Image 1 (cartoon, rainbow, N blue to C red):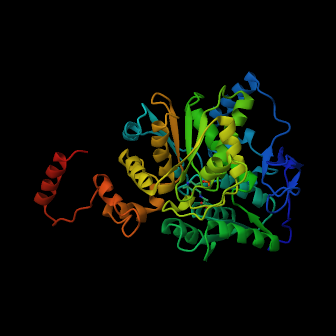
Image 2 (cartoon, rainbow, N blue to C red):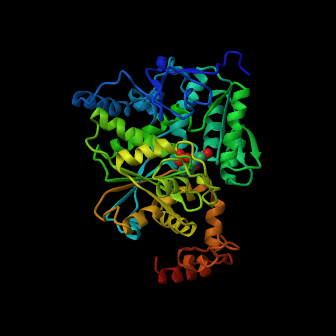
Amino acid sequence: MSETAEASFTATSRGCKLRCVACTSEFERAEQDFRCLRCGELLEVFYPLRRAANAEYAQHLRASWLDRKKSFKVLDQSGVWRFRDLLPAMQDWRNVITMREGNTPIFELPRCAKSAGVRRLLAKHQGMNPTGSFKDTGMTMAISVAREEKFRWVACASTGNTSASMAAYAAQGGLRSLVLIPEGKISWGKLSQALDYGALTCQLRTDFDGCLRLLREVIRRLPVYLLNSVNPFRLEGQKTTGIELLEQLEWNVPDHIIVPGGNLGNSSALGKALLEMKDLGLISRLPKLSVIQAEGANPLVRTVRENGGKSLVTVTPHTMATAIQIGNPASWRKALHILDTTEGTIEQVSEVEIAMAKTEIGSDGIGCEPASAVTLAGLKKLVRSKFVAPEESVVLILTGHLLKDPEYTLKFHRGELFAGTAHEEAEKLLKSYRRESIVLDADADAVVRALEDAEKQPV
Ligand code: F0G
């Protein structure tokens, strides 16, 4: 362990301060678990010296962000650090660990638009980040702070993507990383990433919530830097996805943004970006930000529906979308604040709806991991309930790459996904969505016949 690692971090030297999201106490430094010393709730970063809305400054920001796109400087090539004017500052910019994250594309989803019943549907694909998920945008920020604070070890509890991202960035920056994952509950694709990038990978016989609880105990005993999304610096990095999205839309504000909800860090970060952009005059109105959860891992949905958001209703989570198999989300208060201020909503979707939506996104040539597909499944329900009107503009945030969980996809197409489960009947319903891989003799005639047969089938 590094002798110099400290148990608290200075925020003021980074041009920002920390504030409790519940009791609003302000802090110059945070404890190692990033919780409020007075009430134990989460902290958020804020910028006391930031200018108020001002058209000239907003124009200056937009122009300099565009200008940096022409630069070959490492910082400018990162889709996170290009927006560094709105991020905590580094004391020494050479401490930044970046893999040119962000810079993710927006795609049209014409087939999905049709099946959801909207005129036009866009998806920002965060699975196109260096390690295949949105986690990289937050990781570059928080792990750079860890290096600057001279930590030798970083750690996270994870459903897979955070661990893959943390392990990669730690390796790039010469840090050691500790991963706690729930045994048998994450996809092999993600586990294999953490192993290849050299993390100390511990599979614990518990769920994600249990891993996070245990990690809080570990960091009390050892000088290890916590990289879960309770770390407010991570959310500052993730915030840039919202800024990049609006820039890509040439600052035309969409009516709706739809994200999956797990530990609820991502929805909080995107919402924070929207509020800050509004405060700075970069946008003139807010899109509605809505959060979709799996029916079997729906603590936010229950919290809103059962007690109006007063206190968190935790659940024992079960979903095949393992990335969002979380029953006790840390950032629930932050996410509720965003739902309130942007006038977004919550929705839950079934396992069958997720599977169907995932293959529909695939049929537009995009693809994503199961947790990301809840966005399309949720949109369909929001159109049916008239929360989203057909002519409104909608952006789905796809959070992870299709190849993160190939086992799920193969099982789906083989008709095995729901075998032996309560949803077995659904296999019949899903039949028309499945594509088989056919085994043929090595014979051109056989391939030609297969093509001619396929030509007769509806696409
Ligand atoms: N989508 C994917 C692909 C994820 O990996 C996660 C979370 C989410 C959505 C939900 O985001 O937690 O910010 O609400 N994955 C975490 C992990 C928990 O450990 O990789 P959230």
